Image 1 (spheres, one colour):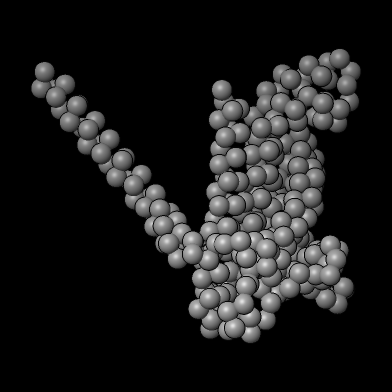
Image 2: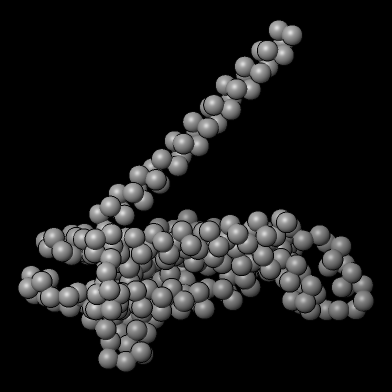
Length: 286
């Protein structure tokens, strides 16, 4: 009886410690969310989503200002990065998991790990050398390439893990009926790993969406909407992380409020991406 009581006490103590640890982990996130919402909710209005920022004189004169160009620019740059990173990242993941004995794999793995551990600002500098210098101008395309460097190693690693989780018997069944290796991978293995691939892509997308440092060298920023849609690709373009930083260091109180509002939009965007990834993961296990 005494032993049972001691076990119950130990269980309660451990349970309490686990609950306390969870609260400690979640508390910073809750504080950040509350602080951002309290400071930025007043600036979230119709003008915020329909007007451009313009010159500082608009803020001084109290004229309507917003970040419509920033929100659109963020979506354009992020999806450009996704278009670039997904096929390359999945291809690298397939190479690592399905052809483990290939002579290029050790080099590919080292390069992927190096790119994953490289500071984001260096990835922006790499995109600056590859895109901005030859084009002679900052652009949304350069920003997309910079964020693609952020996404690539994450997508490659999650693709490798997802494909490795598929039983080898599935591959052997396809090979046994005479299908070539590439056909087995594309028609059998990848469909079986689709939830993991989508989850990894969403996580990489959310990670890149919050990066500001790579964009300082590449997309640069812009206070106005471009004259045409191609301007989001070929000209300097604004993004939420980058604009949030510039608004935070500006001398205008109104711009500070807009910076908090931009933080709300960015936070919601990132949370939705991670929530979608979590939902897909749970759907896979059910």
